[in-house]
Amino acid sequence: MDTKEKITYKVGEVARKAGVNKETLRYYEKRKLITKPDRRRSGYRIFTQHHIDQVKFIKRAQELGFTLSEIKELLELRMDENTTCSEVKTEAEEKYKDVVEKIEDLQRIKTTLVELIDSCSGSGPKGECPILEALEGENKMGENLR
Image 1: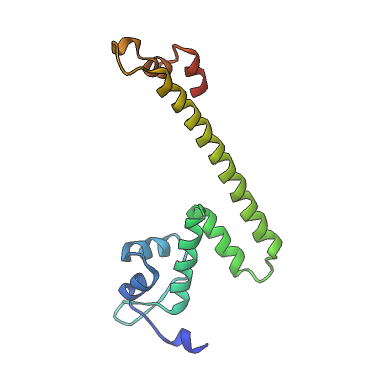
Image 2: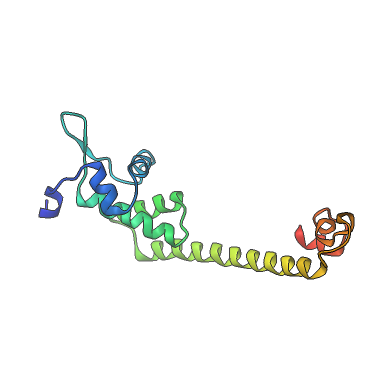
């Protein structure tokens, strides 16, 4: 056990150092995203630097768009001594493909919204509003919404 692992922290200290709240730590523990901390005789949980590092890993992975389920897989790969870098790369490539798909979907939505906004003068009765007509599927642009 190295020196860092001998230092213990209370839940509030871990939350502060990792930049999350106590409820998030409990949730991560419940979802088995972080190693179950030991407990004192009093029942209080004892955390180490390892727990702080795990939470920071989770946060960085979330910033890259990984879901908690995907992060759990990454953590399992990280802890498995037999995992290869290739396996981790595959996970990252799958996430990249998901992100590209989402960007394409957002581009399609953006284009359709611009077309809808451009088609509407903003005046006239709402019964003739091209935006509402498109949402109701009553004009050609409405086909792009499917």
